[in-house]
Length: 232
Image 1 (cartoon, rainbow, N blue to C red):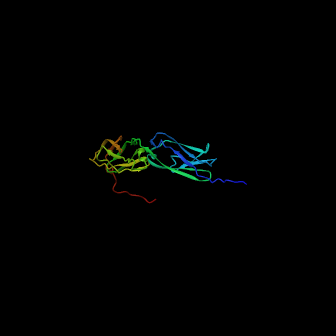
Image 2 (cartoon, rainbow, N blue to C red):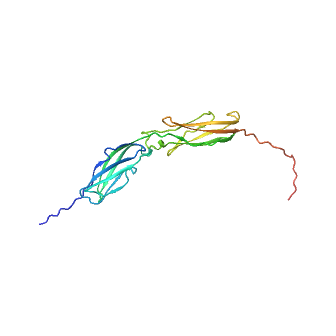
Image 3 (spheres, one colour):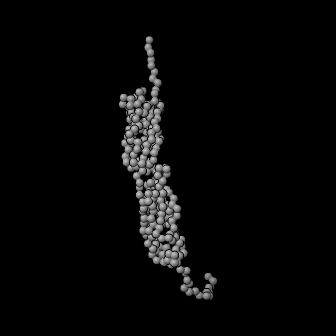
């Protein structure tokens, strides 16, 4: 008589997942390997992770029922932090196995950079609000518990006030505001130094000129008291 043994598909098993390369500095390339075995898979094992920057879907052809995926990426400020990476291996019949590893990306501090501020001509009696921008890639770090970057602004002249900044991506945006009047600060040319500091007290600054001109009330140069007009 004959005995037929039917295969029962087993899921792949992850046997190695970047075991020795789980801490890396920002801007330093990461290279590591994920290995899986599957004794009844002769075609493809697909690897994926819950973080696309760590491992996009990769198809690997097994050799002797083993498969490997190479992890290769250079972390930026967006990846700084301690990440729970869920790695999944899936066979051709969609059976899966998963393994969670912790991957730590440490921050390399970035310096802030204040954008150019153009020279300005202002007139007494008017109000001015000028946008000023600082870029700092540390603002991209997703978790404030890992590193809380914040930018503060300062002016060398007390008659200039700077609003509380707002953040957008890697940019801190504030407004420089002033309303010159005669005697405060006075007519003339002023040398303005705007400085910005990050959480580590690194400084960036811009120097520019504000020329203040007296804005006098317009005067009539002469007007006849009576005018006569003819129809049409």
